[in-house]
Length: 255
Image (tube, rainbow, N blue to C red; front, side):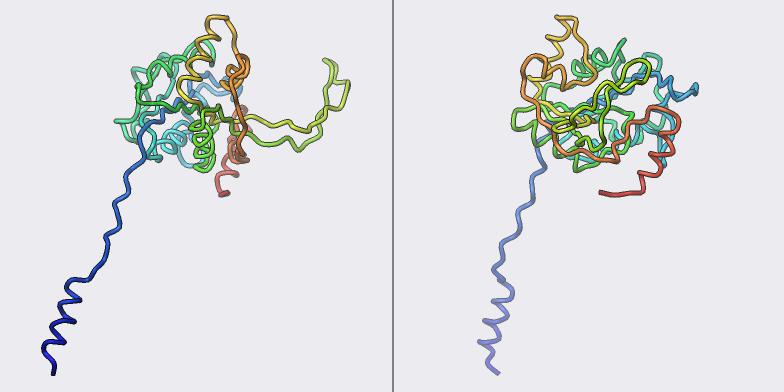
């Protein structure tokens, strides 16, 4: 037996030349999220706040909170709540990373609530994502798409193209005209923006006493660039009582 040969081979095996895979660095935590949950939910015809009701296995707000905190680039999630719940929130809200959770005071309208959330975001949050708690089934793909566009310096809106024929009608229900649906999209949330962009949009809206139904519109009003990205049919906005059952049905589908 050639002991030298075995020794070389054994030595070779002991000195196996491999390059260890580098440990991936976590992405920079530069994303701040504002979840708007300050509404009264009056159209659901119940005394319990809509955003606190259970749907698809957990409270509505908790769905969104946990979805955003699942992303390593998220530095902080600010939940904007009605005044009476900021100091005394429901205990389930702490089923998350509490080091990345802040509670903020809701305003008299949506724009004011978002502005309050912006003030509470830490300075390292260079990208801001704004989401409605009433859309509990937000997908990770959608979140990623709006963040990617915001990193390119643009506002980004999750949306879906309109597929139905649209009719404009008068107060009596009479059809005035069929609206061309080409280029029309249904805006959803999340929406994402560079921090400087959304700060400016809200500051100028406040100074001019302007309001809008979403944050992208505030950017559009002052000529800041906004793009749409593909949203999700799962991103139903729960508005009325019947929407809870629809959300339960949608929750079993994956995209």
